[in-house]
Amino acid sequence: MDFVLSLLLAAVVWRVLCLRYQRGHIALLAENLSGLQLERHMETLTEGYARAIREDSESRQLQVFDTFGQTERTLASQLQMLANNMQKEEARATAICTLPFCLPFVERLLPWLTRDFRALLRIHAAGLRHIVDNQENLSPKDRAFHLSAELYLFQHSCHWFCKSRSVADARLMLRHKVDHRKVLESVTERTRRAYLGWLQGTEVKPQH
Image (cartoon, rainbow, N blue to C red; front, side, top):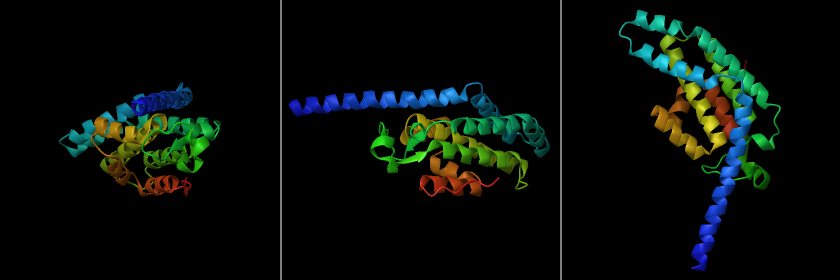
């Protein structure tokens, strides 16, 4: 009985520590998002792209895609602003655990199990700008496909930072009916290469 009670107490303490730790990450990201409208612009684009793809005629698709140019540019600029804002934060505050579950204060106990969220945001900002500027001369439909994947991956990273990797995976599947592996396959090669380098601890700085 004492063993069971000890396990229950340990579980309660663990949960309290996780919630406290996650609240700190959520507050930090919210502070740096203050004044930006990233979520609203992301919703506008992802819903708008889905609507455009459902159009029967290619000419109508192009017309719908063309209406989102300003939103795309604004979103790319605001994501870069977020990446820049986060650079002022300390490394410990922006550490993200590579384990599937939340490990409170992992950056102090097991720092080799962490990666820098600030570096990940730089990768997302560069990847989104690359697509918005259409440096690869993609067709409007392919461009929308890759841009949506970039946004899904960015959203996954934010949920990972605020909660845990497993929670981010679950939310990605719940909201967009796609898993992390598929999203990573759907972003551009430059983003995927930089992201995998970051994940493996051998960050490849994104090209501009």
